[in-house]
Image (cartoon, rainbow, N blue to C red; front, side, top):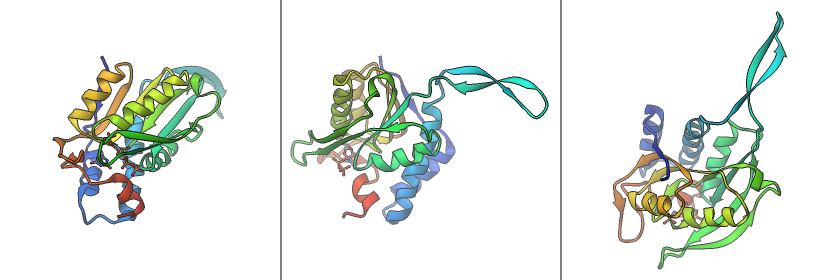
Amino acid sequence: MANVTIMDHPLIQHKIGIMRRKTTSTKEFRDLVSEVAMLICYEATRSLPLTGVEVETPLCKTIVHEIEGKKLCIVPILRAGLHMADGMLGLIPNAKVGHVGLYRNEETLEPVEYFCKLPSDAAEREIFVVDPMLATGGSAEAAIDILKKRGIKKIHFLCIIAAPEGVERLKSAHPDVEIFIGSMDERLNSNGYILPGLGDAGDRIYGTK
Ligand code: PRP
Ligand code: URA
């Protein structure tokens, strides 16, 4: 069954608390998306394999540990995932970045695909799909379907806020995907928004409402 990690780090909880406030400005919100994503990324990369490499310090030779292969790829779900990718690149600057464009149909709440561009060697990479919000789970499920159809196997999903409904949907659609969550909220409202949540993440990042 899917492995779910809910972050309990005080810095993450503090920053998400600021994001939830409706008085938080667009700029501050956008910066916090990047910062929280970087902190979640720290945990999500914990199991990356290391390999020993000989180096010479100013005093002698020694073995240091480096990340093996370095074949990583971040895939933000547009639009809101973009700023999570920026934050993660601060920690893993050599990762490649693919993009999947999806929006939720406001009536059916089902995702509509409008864009997909991935590195040509994406199938050989370890993939980190990122989106601040896991609400019904439709967008995450669809994005991962798209990646798997292109032969991608090793996938992690990172979000800032999740609803239990979305986590259950994602776990049952993609039990092999590791899920990392900044905060597990209470439930969805009748319009498919997460409660207490933080509103529409894309609108808050880009100031479109
Ligand atoms: C938001 C969010 C997720 C999706 C989550 O995107 O960024 O992609 O909703 O909802 P779900 O789990 O019910 O699918 P939105 O559709 O508002 O698009 P946007 O990022 O372009 O604003
Ligand atoms: N998408 C968002 O941006 N916020 C929600 O609460 C649900 C879906």
